[in-house]
Length: 227
Length: 227
DNA sequence: CTCGTTTCTTGACTTTCATCACACGAGAAC
DNA sequence: GTTCTCGTGTGATGAAAGTCAAGAAACGAG
Image (cartoon, rainbow over all chains, first blue to last red; front, top):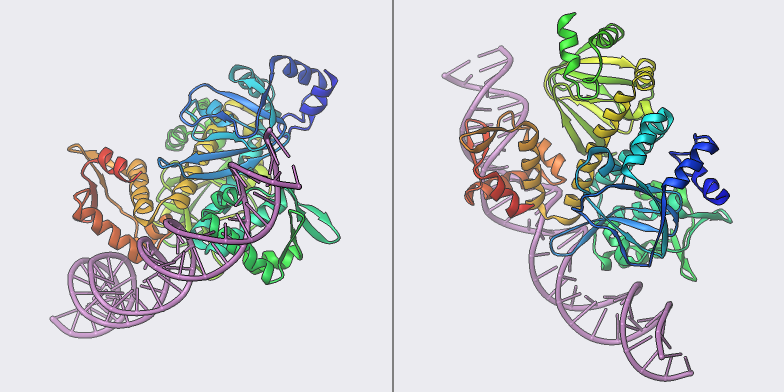
């Protein structure tokens, strides 16, 4: 399929490959569909494969014994996950849940490892990606350790702005804002605190809400105030 | 130097290389010594090199504007750091400080990248290492988000046990316990809380202190109680 | 449109823990 | 030895934020 190859070309770790190789990959992979809310992978599961998101959004979560969850990240189109279990062979350390209906492209462990071996550029691209994720994780640890609730919420908003924000009239708009409960699970705080903080930011003039979209009036100012 | 090669052979990401290649590396690298407390790398600095710890201990820290710090990890002999700035070329996101007098082996960016290119096994070993670090970071994020102070402190103690604990008479001993302030910076809590929690754990019979060593009486029990 | 569910807002109350304060002990410096 | 410094132990206090509760708003299904 032409489409498939076009799509794979946009995946950060595969983009250096030749069309011919992408064609091979498109043949060994499988497409899978998931409804909103369905569990794609469960923590503690064995079995390993790489998943690339064709469409939709998923959250990577870790769960508490009493059902509370932390969202480690939210991934969207052409992001991938599942590489950790492949690389070190250990059980998955997190679950993956579809937050919208999603279509995924799955590559089996063996095929992916072959890819890594045959194409050093893929390995290096993957190293870069993992490095980026590590940087994000470190930033998150810093935020959770040092900042108060307001700072952590601001952080999550800014993170969203970077990931899915669109610039319009000099302001950053975030549509498809996650549920407050999910924001809370990203910020390490309670749902109520998310509500209160966002309204505090609105009162201070940093944010606005228009037709479900969250708008950051002055990205830089907001950032420097709370970062 | 024979020693040097012996030493490099113990570094996780280099252990698959031939003695001859290790010899080459030992020639392009430089040894450096640092006193206790000295700053090895500073956040925001450019310049990139890989550092392998020959002896001593260092902490990887991120700092607040007002001087508070988070310890992202503590590294010891044959651990390495500095790979992130090499891989993605961005400025360092954390500082590195010697917590004991330390000797490091430094490999320049160019030499390290060549290594990655020439030896796929090094790239794959590095992928595994980064994966492990990501797992640790994720666990830390979970702990910081979901657990109360007691849980986070227990977590740090268990982490130390895994990293530097020795098993003796069925108990886990941690000598060279970091300062309480450093434990606090790992657990995202205050120095006083560390003191209080450790004594609470001692009162509950989980821990003991003998001649400066911290002892976990029943590792599994302690873990299941607080994890 | 209407009803029912889900999500959000806001107030009141409670808990946790950071902070301040100070005392104590061990080890280094002299 | 004495004095100083650094790390630790512990109580008192207050601020921050979690929890509980109840109503409002938004959204979807029929």
